[in-house]
Amino acid sequence: MAKPNPAPSRLVAYELITQVNRQGAYANLRLPELLLKTKMNLADRAFTTELAYGTLRMQARHDYIASKFIDRTFAELDEKIVDLLRMGIHQITQMRVADHAAVSETVEVAKLVAGESKASYVNAILRKVSANSNDLLEIKDFTTLRRLSIQYSHPEWIISSFFDQMKDWAEVELFLAANNNPATPDVVAWPGKSSTDELLTLGATPIPGFVNGVNLPGIPMDFSPIVERRAGVQDRGSQLVVENFLASFKPGLSWLDMCAGPGGKAAYLFNSLLSMDKSATFLANEPTSHRAELVKRVVNNQQVVSFDATVANNFNQKFDRILIDAPCTGLGALRRRPEARWRKSLQDLKELVLLQKQLLASAYQLLSPNGVIAYVTCSPHLAETKGQVIDFLSAHSDMKMLPMGKLELAHKEGVLSDGTVQLWTHHNQSDAMFMAMFEKVG
Image (cartoon, rainbow, N blue to C red; front, top):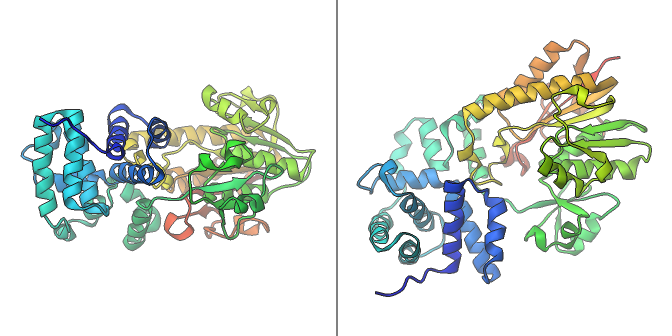
């Protein structure tokens, strides 16, 4: 019997898929580690990334297709078989891979990681899938929610939350489709340390409307300004948030980034303030110690602390400007984190909404008269966005909305009639960031 000989690109893809699905790994952190151990060329690395990330994103659709051909429930299938089927179906239905190669190459991986008999089962199912049209015409008769859940591979509760905000199924569908398109990284030049001119000479392309932002059609860690910590990988939505916050700038203020880890917004804010106003003071707080260490890499150590930010008494001063980049479900960044849609639950949402309320209450206590709070989430869920705004303003009569449209230097994208900002991936080519700014009266 011939020894299994899987292609390294597919074997690494399988390793990532199974480590993410079965061991709780994060794809964006684990994949670079796995790739470092290989001698694959650039094309094979790109294939591995497309296959692994795509499989993780689209696995609900793949499971629906597989369920037509398996002879038992998914719960009864070996976990290795489940992940191998998903990987094979992704190649058959979503990639430019010949059906025979998709089947035979996946079977080679199966022989190595699961043994001959399980490989035979994978072979039989994938052959049936490849002989089928897989056009999913039947789902047009399903409820809109179930159809979208299968077609775009998102949990139904998440899709419902998008509809609650958009009130338009066609818009929801465009957003779901955008979540499944891989995004090339955005990069921000940190003022005083690098410039867009330098980044452009290295092969980046400008982002219209962003003074310090570029897009990078490559691997960030091959980019010297990032390796040297003079620039950072940062979605343009997050860049917009920092720039909108800086639109409230006045000389001599004290600034607090309340939830700073892993440090992207803190670094951009800190370096911007250094270049704008030497008299400004800045403090970055990150309650989780290992994330605080990441912040220290991009912000001066003496300006980074690690407190529970829900307890205002942990801080020994008040601040004129407070950024709450609140822990959230991350439903606005599903395109960048392929496994995130399967990791979040309604229980997570409930816990995060409570934490967000506590952070807002603490920030209110820490705010100086006439001070400004910027509340930000990478989620469009109403409970994490508009709901928090309504609750906060109703609880604090001396706080008022600072409408983004009234800040001369703020971006105009995503500004709503109430003065908050809601970005959408399919409209703004960014994560679906939310931002509200509040001002203390007197």
